[in-house]
Length: 521
Image (tube, rainbow, N blue to C red; front, side, top):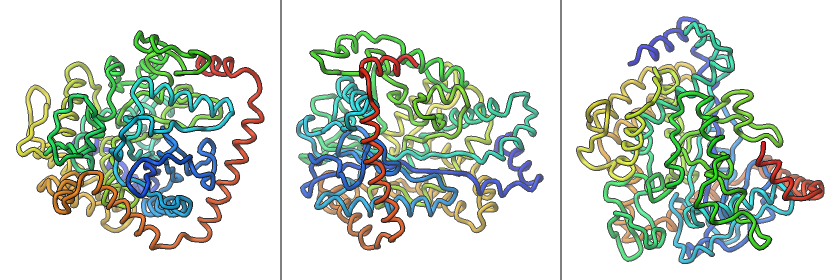
C-alpha cells in the first residue's frame, strides 16, 4: 500500500472523520438504442410522451433519435441511484410500444448508415447547435460508430474531505486549486489502472459483422453475422470503437488543470486540413460547427473527464477554468447485457473503491514513455484481456496482468474496509471479493459470459442481445412503477416540452451570429 494512501486513511480514522466517506456522491448516465421487435434500429422519432430531448433533465438522446440517454440525480446511496435508473427504464417502456431498449454497448444490425437518424432538438438556436454538432460527427466519424452505447459513472468526494487532506499534506494551494490538483491525481492513477475495470466489466467481445464493413479488424468469425475476439473484453473501447486518428495527435496526460485546459482549448481553435475539406456551411446547410480538430470540448474521446456543472451559456472549459474540478466522469463502462439497468450495485461499489484508491494513492505525473505504456496496456486488455499469461508494460519491463490485478485488489482492501466502516456492513469488501474471483477465473467476466451465452444458445450477437433485451423488459415491467415517480416524470416531460417551446420563441436574431459568438467563447 502506498504511503500516501496509508497516511490518508489513518488521518481520517484518527480525526474521527471516516464517516465522511459515506457522503461520496455518484450519478449514472446510461445510453441505450431503441430497437424494433426484429432487433433493428428504430426509425421512429423520440417519443413525445418522454418530453423534450433538449430540456428534459432525466430522459434525453445522445447522437441519434434512437439512442436514449437516462440521467439519474446525484445520490449518496448507490441502491437508490440504481433503483431510480430502473424506474427511468420502466417509465420509458410505458411509451415505447413494441420497441425494446438494446441491452448491449455495440449496436444492433445496421445495413445502411442512413438508418441512423441524427437527433433533432428543435428550432431554437441551442437546439440547432446540438444537431449540427452531431452532423459534424457524422462527417468526421460516421453515423454507425456514434451508435455505440455505454454508461458514464460520475463520482465526487465530499467537500468536507478536502480541508482534511490539504491539512495533512501541508499544501500552500488555495482550496479550489488543491481540490482540482487532487482530482487530476485521481485521473492519472485511473489512466494507469483503468485496464483493470476493462477486464472486470468489459462486456463487448463481439459485434455484428456489418459494423466494421470493409475496415481491417483482426477479429475472428463467430458465425455468418458475428465477429469476435476470443479473448476480447471491450471492443467498444478498442480501435474499432471510440477511436480517431486526428485526436491521436493530442497528448493529454492530465498532469495539471492548466495543461488540460490549454491542450483542449488549442484543439478547439486549431484548423484541421481534413475537416477543412468538408466545409462548414455548404449550399446553405451546415456540415459541422467549425473545421477545427475539435468542434467543441465534448468531442474529445477519453475514458475519464474532469467535470464541473456549467452555468447557462457557459462552456465546460470555461466552468472548470473558473471554478475548478467538481467531479469526475468515468466513461469506459460497457453496458452489462446480463443486468436490466446495465450496471449493478456490486460494480458501482467496486468502482467507488477503485476511484477512492486512485484519489488517495500517490499520483506522480504521467510523462514520456509512461504515456505510451498507458495506451498500450489499455489496448492489450480490450483486445486480449482474457488471454492466459497476458503481460502488461510496467516501468522498464512487463508484469503478468493477473499478478498486477491481484496486487491492486489487495491494496484496495483497506479502502473497502474504510467504506464499510462509513456505511456499516460489508458490502464493499463483498464487492471486492466478487472481482477477485474474476481475476482468478476469466470465465466469470461479462465478456466471457456473453460469448458462452451465444454458444450455449446457438445465437449470433444480434440474436443473443435481442433475447437478453426482451428478458430485461419483462423483468423491469414485472415490478410496477411507483405512482410518485410516474407523476414526477410525467410532469418533467410536460415541463420540458414547454421549456423547449419557450427557447424556440426566445431564439431571435441570426443563427450564424449566435454560432460565431458561441464558438468564440
